[in-house]
Length: 279
Ligand code: HH2
Image 1 (cartoon, rainbow, N blue to C red):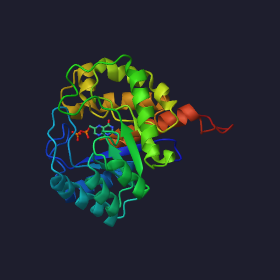
Image 2 (image 1 turned 30 degrees about the vertical axis):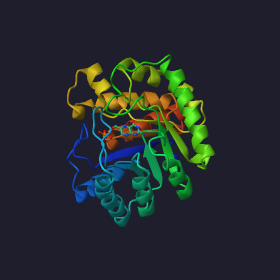
Image 3 (image 1 turned 120 degrees about the vertical axis):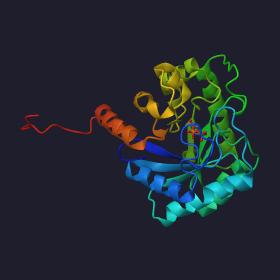
Image 4 (image 1 turned 180 degrees about the vertical axis):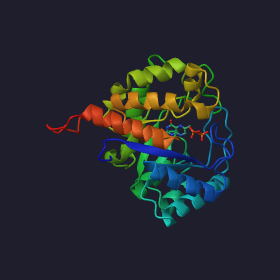
């Protein structure tokens, strides 16, 4: 964790069909420059993804995913990035090659269930991993999602996955947990998860939250363009920090970083006012 008590994970999508910035960073050089810019804005982690997980998205073949992400990971490291590199994938072969190339975190939206080799790959590399909850798969997940109690159900899922991944040989201190905002959830589910996030924090692992530009924010604000959802993204991230989340996956790093820096300073009161201060 950073000395400020939070880490911003900047999103680098190297996909032609990501819902908010698809195609913009397709060329590796552009993606590398974008990643370095996100780092300069305050990202401690850079999450490189070559397969869109947007609702309805089609899977991408392994060779194509590798072709998209490897040059970006290598290029970021060659250019001397100090950020941790995360690979956003559900394929063990992509994770393995990304880890060889220098990534040290596997961000898998299937919580390491999608590919039976994945837990072994993460364990063998001694890498960090993020276990995210998703109901169904990206093609079907937004069709009438239902839960008994959304927070209790996801808490049970995450604690079972945590135990399974530890049993597969991944050190517990390397595991992050994520409720998967927008992955098989209605607006009401997303809001309840944010409101009761402290219940997931109680599992004892750092909680990652990914609300950035997502469609429920569009529904709440009436903003159709994902680019216009930055203020809504900030509000959810500030609230999530206050409820105990510590890693924030976002596209708009500078505004979210600054909002969290002020929130963290306020909540944890690291600043003292000098006695002769007139301000
Ligand atoms: N959300 C997306 C992708 N990966 N990983 C984690 N841990 N948590 C999330 O909430 C999360 C995630 C979807 O957002 P985006 O990357 O913008 O879209 P796409 O999947 O279309 O690239």
